[in-house]
Image (cartoon, rainbow, N blue to C red; front, side, top):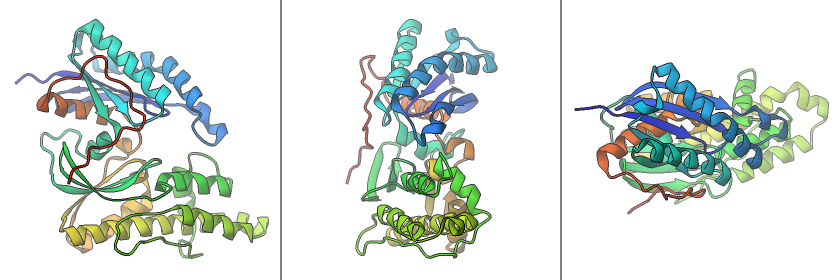
Length: 337
């Protein structure tokens, strides 16, 4: 059976990315990180759109060149349809539509969240469903029962801030920069995770999360300390905050797995790159005889490999999308049951 050449395009936020697959196999991928946002402490949507406009053409050309291919070799295009920043999504989707029309190849709109969930299985012909997914990023913190690539059930979610959002906000409170997740992770390695006990929010009778109170708890704590104390114990404070997040995420995940009889757990999203979370869930799953899938660090953050891989499954499972599909900034997973 012929394995189609699939071009994947990802522009949901501040990463401009392209990937090429031959069937289910990754040939090459490129991700260009937009450094313009660093000095602002967060992503500036207008600047993100402008950067995508500048970078997308060279990134697509570069990935094809690395594969020894040209646009004429592309047989299908997969592009992020949402969720994400409206302007950023429009840049990628408009570019993909133009290519699809010019090359006369099918176009597949991909849910960015689904891409993260299945990034664990890039290169595999078979998806080991069902499983419990801990989806944890700057915009999402959810526990999802995944029955198949088209069948999801929401088990629990954050009631306020996502975990990744909490990392960024606390990093700003501590004055250590952006993006907060990787910086706190790195700083915490030199700190004491039990230096201070920050609050954990767990709801009896629910599998939901909350991180807003934890952020406020950190703010209240540091507001009572002298600047010299904070400076000398910065790593300890960061490690203690990180431990609180990891404790909640791992405890809740393992409780759901036990209650619902899941033996297979999948991590997904940018916070799945957090070294402490990866280690803690690995310890817990091993001690309880459960199987843990952790995405390669390259696929935790936004990338086009996961988009092209979902394109492969869409080609197998259904008809292509029309060229008038819209960017959907608040695109959700379709939950049933």
